[in-house]
Length: 455
Image 1 (cartoon, rainbow, N blue to C red):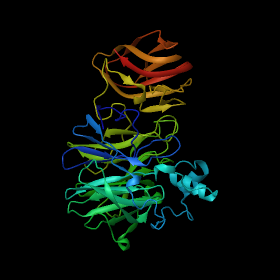
Image 2 (image 1 turned 90 degrees about the vertical axis):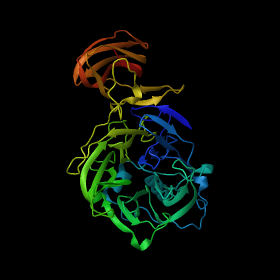
Image 3 (image 1 turned 135 degrees about the horizontal axis):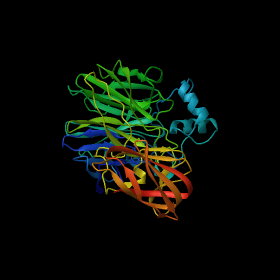
Image 4 (image 1 turned 180 degrees about the horizontal axis):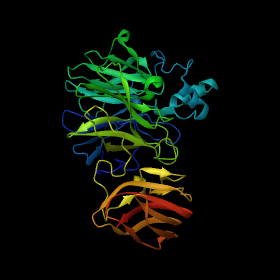
């Protein structure tokens, strides 16, 4: 168990990578976040889950492992039924594009390509099956964790506590990825899953079974709703909000949404809530949810790091639900659920909310996190900083050499030169008010930025 305090993005310490965030306020009043766990450079997710909780969006706990694939008694059972996920014989245009251009962009694509090449569909060694994005809900004092594995099998496990551990896993009669669960006002629970096109069904009273003949297919689809994967359901007033990874902008870096008057549709596409395309040079996907905490709605999502599609990090932004039910698109920020950064407050390089060029955030051999692989012309964006009197100085902790121009709301506030890790100039001139900060780099030689502070 790890405890810490933070109101910034990314939410968790940089060595924790918990993407695919499903956020729920549970009966004890705390917010719990359920996600997968990135634990390697070459594969999405891992064989275990961790639950994150907070009573106030500031004091956080990362609980001990809540579930792992060793708890699934039927995981290695060859007689356990397998149900089809994507229809690979009739792939959609987007899936065809992914196979051609980026075959490692999703584990399902890796599996399919390995099958075609005669290889093992998924080699997971002694660690057990990989576990992809989960969801969890409470009903009648029990907590039900819905999970999926790297072979498209899905299931549910149960616990007396929202953080687990979860046990007694039961297999569901369906196949695919990214399960989601929703309990309506009348107590009826619904289950969702799928990729490219989604499925939904009423859960039985036991929360651990459903009638196959009642499954509703194509609730949201790539063709009509830009749906890629990552189902998530919420209700606001009398409207149901279906949130998902959205490919409207060419790849699933966005979280979009559709609305309807029934938990099983029909749903109308409404637009994009957030796009993480600029979080890392190799940013590829997004997955998250919306949740109301103490009267404020938030979007929970993830960002890639380390110049890969993986090592994804939990982030949060406040959002607005308009009177007409629409949700305004929001930008990624560094401040997250907290206030803007102020004078004297350290801003870490890994808190950049936008990156342009080759630059990305990664730890060195000692585990210290830097903005690294910086090239001439690269930019790093930080939203937002604020000062009543403006700023006259900036101090950076860096390695290597290069010139850093500081842009505040697009206007140059000055330049500083780093020589051999030593800052040669600290004076800048920045106007009062709220500012988006851009660090623009030139004359770089093995330059790395760890943190900076305005004074």
